[in-house]
Length: 234
Image 1 (cartoon, one colour):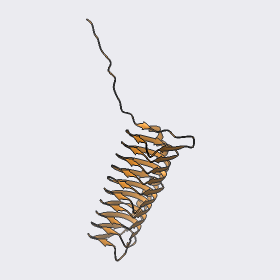
Image 2 (cartoon, one colour):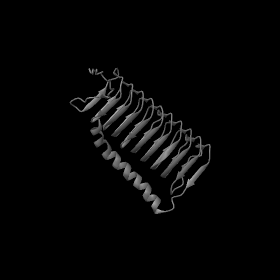
Image 3 (tube, helix red, strand yellow):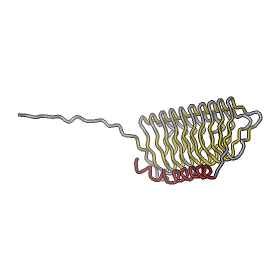
Image 4 (cartoon, one colour):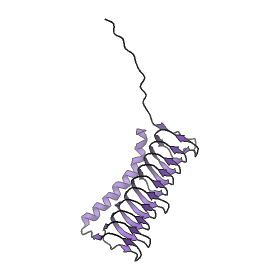
């Protein structure tokens, strides 16, 4: 009895892992194209090129000026997204600026969150943070909680917000219903427009306030600790 066998090579696609320079900066240059997923851990990260895959990045400062074809997850103290994200975007940090185009939903947690006037979110927004400023366009719904929430542009869907202070400024537009939970009345400019109903739910007891504060504490702990352990999985 003769038994023979052959070993065939198995091609396993592994993600591209970027390396940092001596200054601790990881730079994907403008003319650089990565045809793979990109996993990055460093101090300062700048993506000016094209990534034809997903991006997972953690560091102190992250700047995306280029194009990410699929989804992106970034965890850093300071995050600026000025490029284009093909699918969904998840961001956690302290100072967060969305200045570009997000193809699907945005999940964001931070201390100060800004969607600039150039920002376009083609899906919905789920947020938690201390301060949220919506100056850009949200084509879906917005759901979340914060201490200060300012809406200055268009939300094409519904808005469901828990906040201590909610302000709808002159150019604010909500295409659906506005449901907000707060101990204070929202400040709504006379020129702001809500197509649906406005439903104000009062916070009636301390338990609800403590629950909201607990969410901020958990968010803060996630931001401080999450990116420290993420490199272990890269």
